[in-house]
Length: 597
Image (cartoon, rainbow, N blue to C red):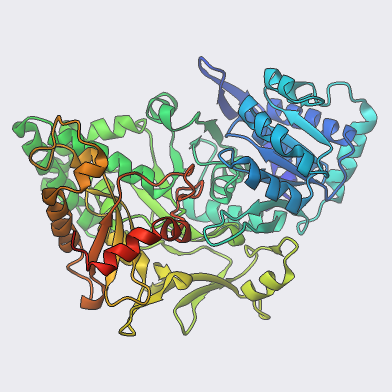
């Protein structure tokens, strides 16, 4: 493996210069850019950054959706020794200002007029920002003094090329590539310092486990500013010489899956759950004969899945039945995801085992993995030829993983971050004197496969002294088709409870008297029949829990959690503390009346 990401990029460009690297949408169609064409643009922007006075170690911030300019800017910043600080485009101005101030960014790259408007509001409070470069030319008009990405570096001479080349030569594996700010589920974001060596160790392990080749085509949907997509959908395919197509977002995703026909795609569990819900909803509305065929097909697929996972032969009879099931039912789902998919990768949160099993029965493999921003990010992942559904797979090659006495997962190796930017005490708390990074997650290792059982900081104690790990209970609750989100509560209380966000599309019309009405959601969840349904669903999906873990009280809320409301991170994780704070009065009332209305 090369010493730096730029060395790896140069090797790939030399090996496959004419091969497609990026497909981006120009408003009417996907346009392909080869490795050599992309490298030319990287050189141009690198010259432009030198012209702006960017020095090695300077911070260059990016606030943008997934697009080719983001990728070009990333490699260009690396080329001049700068450190990128990527930001989610969904962040409000105040949080963008916090990160710009914390990292001391000198240059800011922004994508659209929406992002430029945010910067106009906060730049007076960000004195280190000297230049703003806007990716869309027209949007640059919204900010006095802004530069355009398309013009950056066009007027540079040979001396700047020489300067860029010299800086590339001086890069070392331990040089910082980026500061990735954690999503802040429990407090202010921290800048995680990640180096070339960090990322390349993860890429090398990923290539061993996932066997990515030049023939693979990735659909990049998760934000590039998130470490999962940054490694798995950006650097990994680049080193392999594969192609990456950039999605324009959720509203286009179904059409893009068909148009692009990816072989690999990484996403968060909520996407797979939503796709499963959509399939099941369509089945529910189908004629009874089609429902019967679907159930038969799922039975054959589940039987085949069970044998494959047990390492047993499928056998000719079941093989024929499974082939018929695919022709009659499953081929439609395969066409929905493009028809060429080798596997999905799932990360960022726990994937319900029932969802993994559903897709495996349909012949679609979801490889669940686990990691953190601080570990570049992958610690463990299932492999295409070695997986166990319900686990996050085995630890990747080249690293160490163990379970501490208190059940916490700790890890050591080249994937562990250099620390938190400007926070030495926090760094010492996270990485002990022997180099072990303490993840804060609870888990166990069974036959070498890692299973996540909860979050150490999320454990809470009931008044009877029993400890409750909320995540496994929440995952069990979300196995219900009527529950979109769940947050388990009960700190200091006699029994556990849960905040439930209903899956309203599934709920409406199921309960007698609700179909076709103009009732508001608040009225709907207040109906006795609806509360009865949820009581039965909660009991049904939690029968396996210990008595003290069972959800005795529940609070239905009349809206989804959103990023805009501050209850979800940009990667769709629930911000537990914010949810509890926002519903504090309702939770207190729930326990005061013992769950009775």
